[in-house]
Length: 472
Ligand SMILES: Cc1cc2nc3c(=O)[nH]c(=O)nc-3n(C[C@H](O)[C@H](O)[C@H](O)COP(=O)(O)OP(=O)(O)OC[C@H]3O[C@@H](n4cnc5c(N)ncnc54)[C@H](O)[C@@H]3O)c2cc1C
Image (cartoon, rainbow, N blue to C red; front, side, top):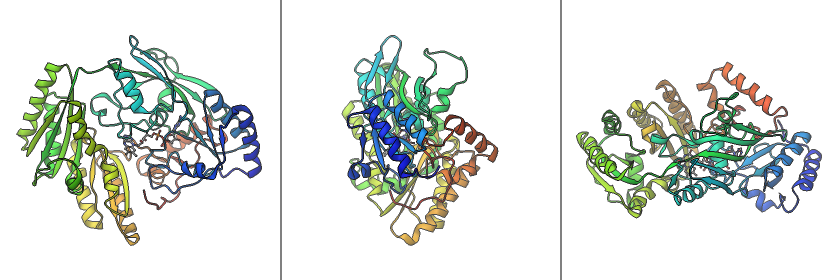
């Protein structure tokens, strides 16, 4: 797919304006500039138009007109993505579902919630927790990111260790195809095996197969109590040993988050925490469940890390104390961004027993290529955010070599290139490192079945150009 001709674009916009009415179609350059990028280093590209959909009907009208006239459409939620998925690299229309933010239904007995795609993940949390229910997926961007973006990227978060990721909570989706048909995919009930599981195909397809306009999500009862432990360790090896020690004892925390020694040094002065001098790593461990059980599990968790030589263990059970421990972790990405002129972040995954090998690889790459590489993330899942910080343009080739080395090592350790951010623009050049030509060809055929004219989110996942050089 290339850019649309100006005539095709104007014809499509006239039809969209007629169908959606009001002020759905936006051409103001300042507003278009605000949807030109996301939270990644993908170079910004201003679209020719933004359409703010208010309903499934609007979404269908946009896609029908865009397909007819061959105009690229890039779906967009809150634009917090980390791989350029919402960046309109071929121009055309950005289709925002952010205004579709109704929580249509929360059913206490069925344990389900029906949401529109623009609902912020944190808003869903608050709405269901008020009713003693629980929606576990918790990307660290939850205050702003939307359910549509979470579904399109199959977002994870710290609690994935115990509960799984967004896709594990999907029952059914309403999806608009590239040609404007409205489909119901998935199952209306908790169980259901009728036909192919197309909901699973749409989840994680990064807006390339259809636009999600509604989702029926599974809920759980809200856990009675939650405790957070902060564990400081003296070396990388203690991280892996501590986690496997927990699992050997049958303890399954809801999160096990790591901040490595380099990240810890960079945030030491404003973490709002007293970090022991000899600490070479910090683990944030959270347990939930019935009050009595959690008390016992906190003690056993403390013992497990104590046996592995933890330097210090802090616990918190009140909301405000837990929030203080979490705030440093949630702000880590933004804090690191202030520590150097350039920052890049990768979200590789290895089997959790290979975490130590991955950390060792990061140290070797950092030394070999002279790049600062703070690492943190969802250690319990083996999913680490490896960051690259540098100050001078001339260092960029070294950074590229370090990234290449990281990907090679990840695959060799039995891992995968992305645990939650997706492929988007930035990782597309590297897809063939992990997937065979046959598998990529099959996925391309599936894409063309869903989107024969290639209008939906072109330039993502498979279209491997060279990696863009920007800054985040
Ligand atoms: C500080 C920070 C912390 C983060 N932490 C995490 C984390 O812990 N876990 C995690 O998984 N991610 C994390 N992310 C990444 C990001 O927040 C997630 O990928 C999130 O799911 C994106 O949601 P969004 O609404 O911002 O989507 P956008 O960035 O707008 O879009 C992301 C992708 O989804 C597609 N899309 C959006 N809406 C729809 C729709 N209705 N239908 C079809 N496709 C659609 C877009 O085309 C694009 O490909 C973090 C990002 C930041 C900045």
